[in-house]
Amino acid sequence: MPVFSRLTASAATVATSLLATAGAALAGVGQPSPWEIGLQDSGSPIMDDITRFNEFLFWITTGIAVFVLILLAIIIVRFNARANPTPSRATHNTPLEIIWTVVPVVILLLIAVPSFRLLFLELDVPKPDLTVKATGKQWYWSYDYPDNGNFEFDSEIVADKDLKPGQPRLLTVDNEMVVPVNKIVHVLVTGADVIHSFTVPSLGIRIDAIPGRINDTWFKAKHQGLYYGQCSELCGTDHAFMPIVVRVVGDDDFSKWVDAAKKKYAGDESAPSNVIAAAAVPQR
Ligand SMILES: [Cu+2]
Image 1 (spheres, rainbow, N blue to C red):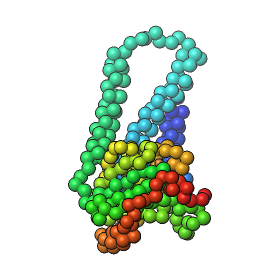
Image 2 (cartoon, protein in one colour; image 1 turned 135 degrees about the vertical axis):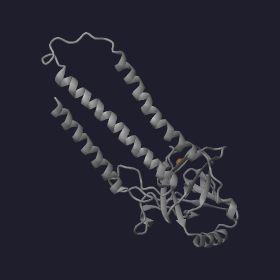
Image 3 (cartoon, protein in one colour; image 1 turned 90 degrees about the vertical axis):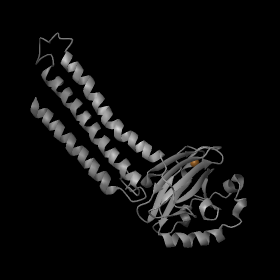
Image 4 (cartoon, helix red, strand yellow; image 1 turned 90 degrees about the horizontal axis):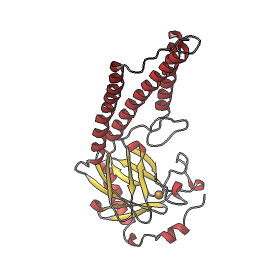
């Protein structure tokens, strides 16, 4: 019955577009928001592409789901035993078989081309303006700035009771990773003990931190601000308590921060060992 299929189709379209708009409206910049169901707002060109690709896939999958739903509805209504007492005995239909082979191949090719393009874009690091090394440790991150005086510091979670107004719970750290805006930041990522994962959703980066190995990724932050992320590899009891905060600032502020950081973290070579750090894990 065409009315039925038209109804289901339009209901599905309304539901999906509502979901898509709600997701976009509730998305936060640099951090998750309550009731958000879409991706976080994009803070880098790569994330723009990821968001676009995600939307493209969303409409392809929605189209397929609606199409299958319509077929099911037609079969249920028109070809049940009562409506269609003498069923057809056809077993082959060459044109139809060609269509249902070729159409999925075309859909997969449509997906594969932008997908591989995006993958290469993520993996192919352009000439960096600065390099930061992030080391995952149980359970905090350390950042090295080899291009800016080779200082290193630890970045640990701020306990709930010490949060200042406006600071997000479980995402705030004492020492943020600071980078300049609109610059290509090459991030070297490794693990000191177990596998962690360096992930900042708004910047579109996620890469495993593997002991004994240096992985790398890159981003170019479009706007100044705070971009939050979390370790995204199950790494032990405090896996959920090793957030990542990237503070993106202007060039002048970045040089000022580098000067201050060089002094602040000078002689910090004997950074706390894991044992001491574990003992000093903040109360929560
Ligand atoms: Cu971890």
